Image 1 (cartoon, rainbow, N blue to C red):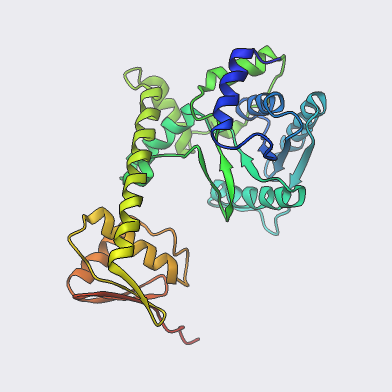
Image 2: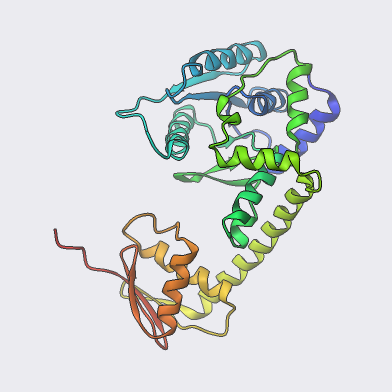
Length: 322
């Protein structure tokens, strides 16, 4: 069903992320990208993969798409589950963001129930290029511009690996795998909705023949490597200049570059924060806080009281009175 050359290529990509013998869950929406991932993984890791389709309950076509995926899975011998989302009140705003959150929550619960060790998704090279442009357009820094990583963790489940073995594959290649197998994947209408930022970026990239998606993806990989180097330096700075004293985190600023200082402060907030999402600070928030600390001032962010001066002290702020 899948040519040997493509299968060997995929097997090498997946082996770099998860050792053979690892039980892997495949997130399959029914689109060509995830169907191609399903076909490749089923042959590369026979008996080691299971698939799940999340029915968000937001589109009438979703049930039929899930049934189609189930039929494909039955044909190739892969266990399949449909994970139906039941909303108390369907989202009216930030629909994609809320759908993403509940999707990963449902997949995490399914994986735990099925004793699966990692989750694989079908993000590919063109997705990576789109992500990089979107983040560049928002003024992202190094970490954001590095895009999606081949191996990260499932959102909301820090100990669960998230694998993206197709980041080196083009969308057209994956579509061809499906057509060669005689399959007709679903076409999500949201992929043509220009209210979606990613759709607008995708159309702009298609119209800009001077932009090379493969080159953009390579740049993201280079930036990811640079980001790892900064993380290494941050670990050293933390060991040398940070202490934990009676529940407080104390940082004695050195001549470290701003990029290092920003991450030290972000780590302190993530460690002590009690409000909002302490691990997801916006760049502007960090910049304002660091300026305040450098001037010797005091500020509170994400439930953390931050005091500047010769040493920067971070403590949990007192709970607010009701």
